[in-house]
Image (cartoon, rainbow, N blue to C red; front, side, top):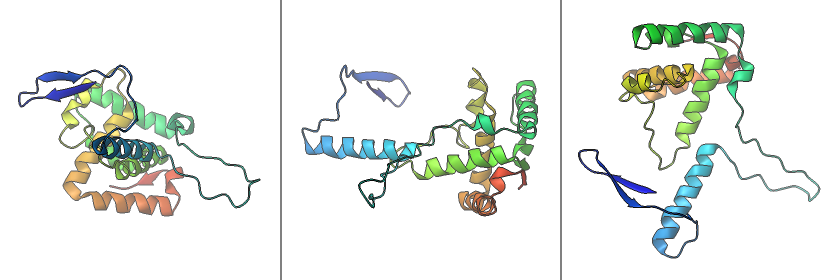
Length: 184
């Protein structure tokens, strides 16, 4: 389905594809569809496997579609409960959410930055520093990671993305994303 938003944000239905295809009949199709396919696969973190050394080698790929929930400590869960309740009560994110990152927080932020780096021609629309006020509309269910990422984006806009990247690289180099970390 193709929808166009006009200057008043009124949606206009342009086309409904009942059978979308990656078949390319024109150079424009090739340019659009191959770029889209490449960006989707990159964003998902799917990698082309390295050349096989011998024909007997087995092929495996890590698609990174695992939930972080299985790795949460009691400290992670306690922090999440606190910040979710704070948001529900006050209608805003507690800015201290980034003061003491748990190992789970660090893993979420590292994965987010990796995905953002692989986004290709896709634009991030949420969470951004400009869309942080929309967190309150994402309440079915309200996710701690949305709060964490929204505040992360606000901090990155204020300090510069490079500062946040350096912090995460430092955490990764010390394997601290597997232990609690104080950052900001």
